[in-house]
Image 1 (cartoon, rainbow, N blue to C red):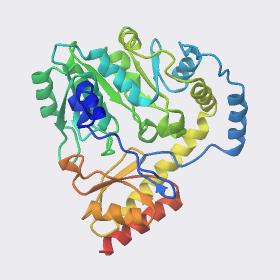
Image 2 (image 1 turned 120 degrees about the vertical axis):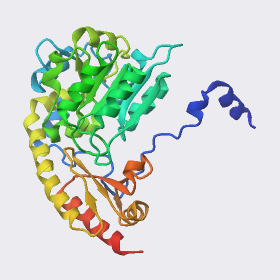
Image 3 (image 1 turned 90 degrees about the vertical axis):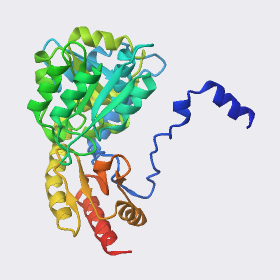
Length: 365
């Protein structure tokens, strides 16, 4: 064993040493359909206008720590209820980590829960914070198993419970009445987080119901709307609860360039909304075309991606990559996702390229 190996063994937590890093494949030269990004850039005139604003950024000073202007604009433009504020994060990932850190109590069993399969960072953030993650399997059709969820809440009393709406990686919307019952069941001992990362494509939200549930947090991101590069997430909750999370937020966690770009985007929200509408329309056509392929099952989606089951996902993804198309092989994530591939809904040309490559994979050894 080398000196650096001994150092790592003596200083890094065993569970961290056992982890594999979150892998993002190099997409150079590929059609990238594995990350649920908006494929459309801002129009040229808007990019030029944004460049002018960015050039005026004050880079030698720290950001204004309260982000008050941006937060006010987010609340006004994105439906945050009156009397509620938002916390900003470096993407949703940081917000998830903030909440996990705030609830994890040293020396005491702290449970963080979600239906599974779910966004991988729910479980990882629980682990990083020293909490225990409990996953409750969805039904085979990917709907919530409400009795199992309620039983798990009664048994484990989670401090934090995530419900993605729509769910990633399955793409479906859970029944809102079931979700409301689960949120209520947590009562005063658990916080429910409704993750609405894909809200622009679902057009269904719990944001307006924040005043109804004191233990509810609604979390969103600008990434899927078309600003993945600026890494900006936000969450809203009862003001007293939000104030506790804000104590854990690192100072200056959102940089000046991201703030300027986000404020600019909110000035031109109609452009991003129009792009989301194009993606929603393309989703329906893409799903119909995929369903025509032999041996392919397409699951309903309210997000900007589709989950499809093929006869052999390993073979299909290898053939897709050989044709310079990247999609996400989900088959090893959870038994319910056996032979499943997740693919971003993109432009007509990129959707057609995926269809052609997948069709080829189904007939090529």
